[in-house]
Length: 216
Image 1 (cartoon, rainbow, N blue to C red):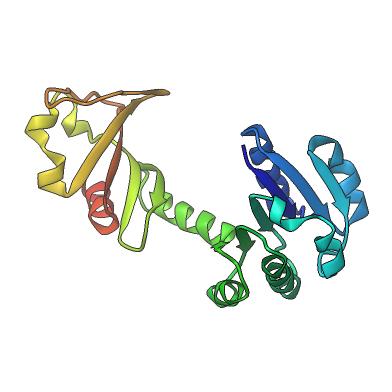
Image 2 (tube, helix red, strand yellow; image 1 turned 135 degrees about the vertical axis):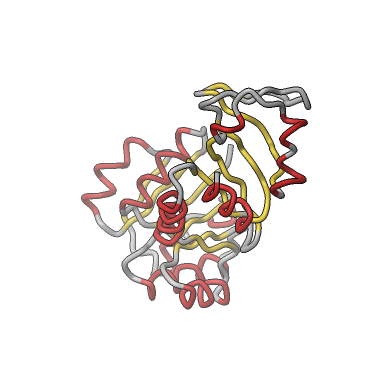
């Protein structure tokens, strides 16, 4: 369980806050909009109506006591930048800030953010990858070169053994596991036989996996 300070309760902040709560974390929310805070306060560990660009308001929260501080403001970059800087000055252990562009990311990192997230960009990239191939169901980008993909098993693989197909050698894909509906295979031996409808979780170079899904 982590103690989280969440500043900015727009759509992104609300969704993030609900997920953090569902995972058992303590979440304090802060927003300058009184109506928003009053509507949400009952769900959270604590809630405050405050303008976080005022350093005294943040100082009163004992910032070092939180494991993570999140600046989820998306419509006012200047506020996000200043709040990020103030949090760091007040001893925040880890600051995560939201950005919309690479320029914003650079400034946020220079002003104290430990991590910067791009919700809109990340969603757009995932959608683009899925649109590119109907055989891709999800993916996690690890860096600019490597990713983990959930992809459909080619129909031509049905009834064949893993050892005979050898996806690592032939396609540069490391097979992590296989999903059958909601079930996940705990381990895969060389004699595993693929079935139509299987989904594979594979790790490798993004370009190679995309090339594989486009051909198979």
